[in-house]
Image (cartoon, rainbow over all chains, first blue to last red; front, side, top):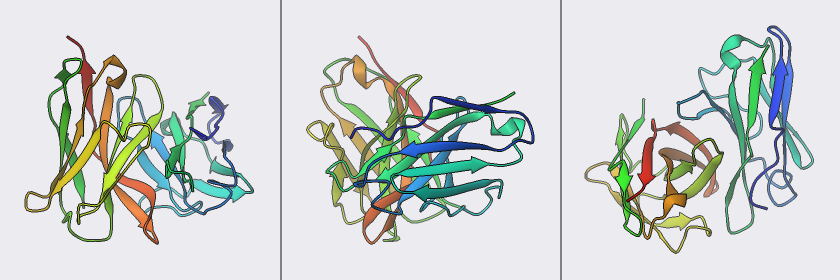
Length: 111
Length: 123
């Protein structure tokens, strides 16, 4: 497995809620609670918004939440705002020699 | 709070060695609680993990790049460095450094990140 699978794009209207999936295997997402999520605005560095499946770093809005079921992790954004328009990447520890995998990335568009 | 800043040439010739440094401020690289890593992003593409180093000097590299990568640390200068040898146009990317959080010794998350540096491989 070279990358975790994410939908290429997700969109929603302001105020709505959206969910981004991140699908792996039992060797990564399903086997460990070491899933993290990153937000990346154009031309900027990624920013950690969720770590260890569902923990938010200090200063990150509580509109962002994470969860996991089986081999799929999910990032939910509630009360969608224009500033949430960005690319989102998941990451997971893996038992393979690669040790770390990133997701394929999801572009979130606020309609 | 901890901040990271990449530095180095923005243009490297094919077959040469790419060399970047990441300077850590607002905290000690020798805290012993984190790894220090490099990640790259090809233009318009996703993220690719390159490798990380502990303050003791122990390293781990992505197997796909292992034969060409060297990461080193200078605790007295509070910085760590990346060398990627025999570069080609396929190594053109934005290179980021980041602090790597761990759980029972396994790499877990990246935070914070440096602003990134675009390195172009071209003659």
